[in-house]
Amino acid sequence: MLLNSVEVKPYVLDNQMCDECQGARCGGKFAPFFCANVACLQYYCEQCWVQIHSRHGREYHKPLVKEGAERPRPALYRW
Image (cartoon, rainbow, N blue to C red; front, side, top):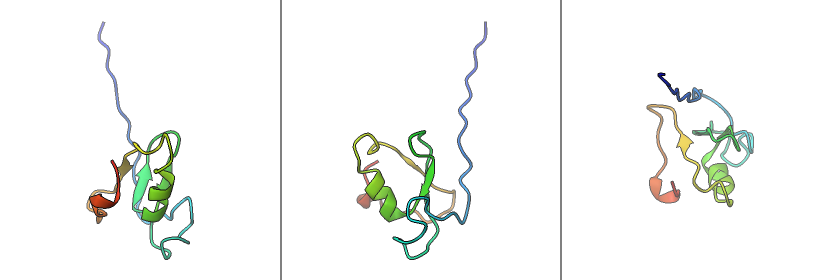
């Protein structure tokens, strides 16, 4: 018997607003992060990512970032 497994990752879309603040905390900039963990499944700006993912149980979620997008300074985040 041959068993295969497939990992499906969500497609990270361009030009998405933060699902948490709708741009209010980031000056209307588009959200660079997507959390694919089933507890989240949302786009986040940098400020909301830090706030939401510093909570117990979410501190180890890893953000998906669109290929070629500017990445934030890693020193600001634990992942």
